[in-house]
Amino acid sequence: MSISTFRAFKNRNYRLFFTGQSISQIGTWMQRTAVSWVVYDITQSAVMLGLTVFASQFPSFLFSLFGGIAADRYNRYKVLLITQTASMLQAILLAILIYAGHKVVWEILALSVLLGIINAFDMPARQPMVHEMVTDKADLPNALALNSSMVNMARLLGPALSGIVLQKFGAGVCFSLNALSFVAVITSLLLMKLPPYVRNTVKKKAVSELAEGFAYLKSTPAISIIMIMLTFTSLLVLPYNTLLPVFAKKIFHGDAATFGYINSFIGLGAISGSIFLASLKPGTDLKIVLLGNTIVFGISLLFFSHITYFPLAMAFAVLSGFGMMSQTTIIMTIIQVNADKNMRGRVMSYVALAYFGMLPLGSLLVGSVSKFAGAPNTVLCEGIIALIIAAVFSGYLRKDKMAKKNEEQLEEDEELIMEKI
Image 1 (cartoon, rainbow, N blue to C red):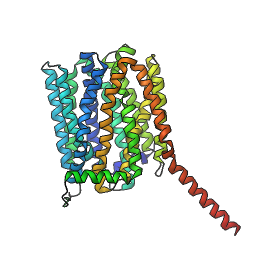
Image 2: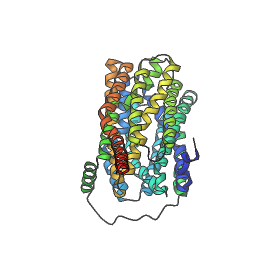
Image 3: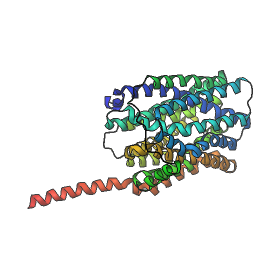
Image 4: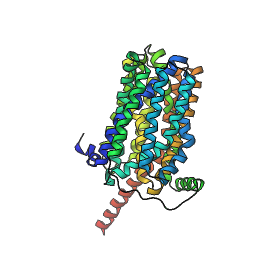
């Protein structure tokens, strides 16, 4: 690891953003882990686990396009302040619910729906804002990779802390700590010095703006094909983590702490992958890296699914985290580097549509299938599907590399001809 791995930190606004988000993301993962465990502890149902994920993410699918319009039409900084404050209030309501002794699943699902709506407006505003925080655009891929490392570090620490807190203090403390963590990100936003906001004077109907975004995607295959890959992966592979509480309790005969450890090992792999990406040299073909990580992801799920010895299973959990991380970081990097400035919000809303739309549907599917096939066989199938997706998209992902090789070969041939002349 070199100094260049952290070159985006030379930007003051990005340092503030990274620090605030790091604390907030740990709280977010603590809450996410606690919600899944509380629901499974009450219902003992994999189907209800799928429904919980569905409740928290499907609203993001329904409202993400409007979130993209808001991100392109209004001041993203103010949108982000609103969504972060709303997320803090949601965590407070969840904590009050638990402290009051109302462990009723439908109330938890209702608050999950609320969070999903908030996230629909948060993601399209938050992701493009990185452009405004980084003055040297050559540092953008590094900033996005560091963003991923921050999220995955939180995925490493959050579930582990959540497992311990759940065992010793209960879910209410997890939700309270998450609410407190939003103070850090809101403070970091208030301390930023961003360029003056320039209002978009062109007024268009929301339907027209959505149509423009879709037409832009159709005319930009460098983005749309990657997004199709994300759609299939989100529907058929990424929902494997819906079944992790089942593995913790039934396969490994553990408790809430065991569930936290599994998530943390996956987070360890993910942050290793993030650091690997941040250390890549400028000009590296990210599509080839994406292909390789997808293959690693599929193979690791094949082994993780049927290994009952916990330490060995965690080794493959680490590998699955390493492979899975590319599905967000590399895709986000490719899309943001290629997207036009005035289209980034809407493009990110379509990314949210592909992710938040397919993942909850996939979670419902995985929960239902596991009821009949069992959790291990379901995860095994997801590993096989990941390899199939890698095979289907390998031609496109390798196209740029082949084109580059052909170009280099052509240059060599031209030099050889000139030498002979």
